[in-house]
Image (cartoon, rainbow, N blue to C red; front, side):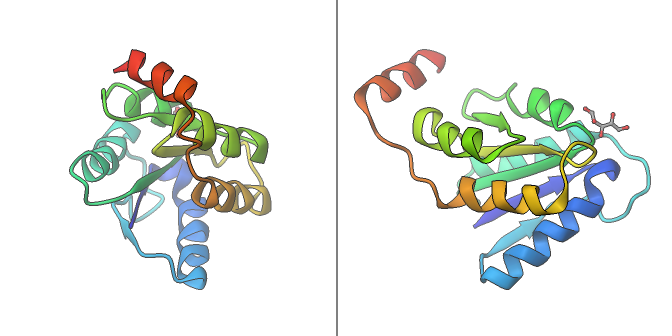
Length: 141
Ligand code: RB5
């Protein structure tokens, strides 16, 4: 299960990602926002992070204009490892090395095609479980 959320700036890309998840048959819950009316990104970061922390979702996807505000808000939670990605290399590496559980993207930064490839890479890539990576993640919590 994927928890997805955005602010107004990320709304259009969120709808595109949702359509993509539906096409792939990947289950998701949409935590809003539900229109392009101006709103506050921390509210949606909080909803998605709560879903991940409560085990209601395996991973989260958060989208705002830059992805930066969402990643700042998400990473205030001890159990959340949110990665702001603008390329597929980072999306793969952050899953393998950081066991990132939330993907953040900037709708004003990325084209839709690249954004969907980043989503696919993030969701398909497993954590390496390497002892060095487990140790480093442990030092963050
Ligand atoms: C909204 O204008 C914009 O500030 C927000 O989407 C995000 O980019 C903040 O980090």
